[in-house]
Length: 545
Ligand code: DMJ
Image (cartoon, rainbow, N blue to C red; front, side, top):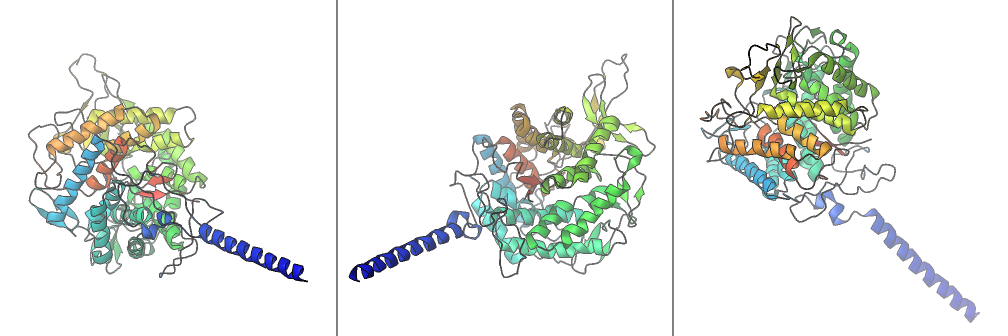
């Protein structure tokens, strides 16, 4: 009897200990540690060595996805939330110089334009075309990626306490989506700050008016964020890029909120263009669409008004984990047609460039600085198995090269537009391959060339791309830096005696400096391209199921 009682006691003790162990084990597995909890590591600096996005927690079926959130806003069950990556700050002196440039830009903006859209650095004033604190929201994720704690905190606090996403103001839907919505979403993914998602959701609701008030799936180009009125001031037209460069951001918002309306509504515009086929130029589309969804015959270009349509074909395909085949097919078709119709060589040296087809159907040898983005899309195609014979990478390199050529002039800065000679006139030996018209000779410090070199460097690891980026940065420092704070667009890249245009575009800190920083890092694992898709304003958004 005693023996039995003893055994029973032993048995009970063993059971108790095992249960405790089990409870402890379960607790350990289910609770994210401090370092994995986004809410506990709002601001992060230079201390961590781990720059990869960290392991997500809590969703066994989807290792990329994280725990389902039950926040005050009852964010829906399929909200994706992965632990924000940690950024270690600059890894070398060149990167440190880029960070110092970002801080100089931020400091100038803070001193003379804080809370307004854009800094006029020479006159020390500001402009407010959006009334959304554009520069703060657009450049916040650059500060985060650079590991800048103070600037990150200032930006997040301003957004949380002062950003009104419903001002009585008419804004361009495309610009607001790529810069502000994209900036808020990316900032949210990189910090886990709920305020950013709350503002993004309200802004998304306001922007949706552009779709719901249109007769067709093509959104109106402008919306009044306060009243919700929507209109297309350019004679009823939206541009191709305006209608088809909203989908990465709206889809991301749907995934985060669990509300499909954003993704579904915006995607209808992409589907509309897909169904239109743009057959006249084998998948290259005219750049104006009216509110009935009809294309108007225009020039065919890869530059202004059309560019990011092509970019979002491949980037949407990647964002959705390669699950929507027609996005891939339309991308491939359009790249083939670009090669056939727009990709030409200059004379006398045979430099490859991307031209346009004018309204009267002639080839027009003109290339916008904006077109340099194409190199990145082609490099992404190569990285993702769409480039069996290496043609896309070859084209990407040629475009990267011609974009470098754009910077070969007295200031070392790139002009807005470049023209090429294509006629083979052997008698005229002094002719140059390219020239810049005086009206096109300004520089807004745009990002597309450094963006191209960033992608090319990721794919090839050829150090010349870093050198090209560094030279462009040195030219920016020399000619565009305003001593009292900020950087200015300049009037003529062909003259060393520069005249400043008195404007710091928000994409300079948001994109140009971000791509320079990412191009020059020793750690090319930062924001890996198989896990992040950069929107057209360089805001990284996650790839998900
Ligand atoms: C940015 O706003 C975006 O990169 C857009 O896609 C094109 N124009 C500017 C930068 O040049």
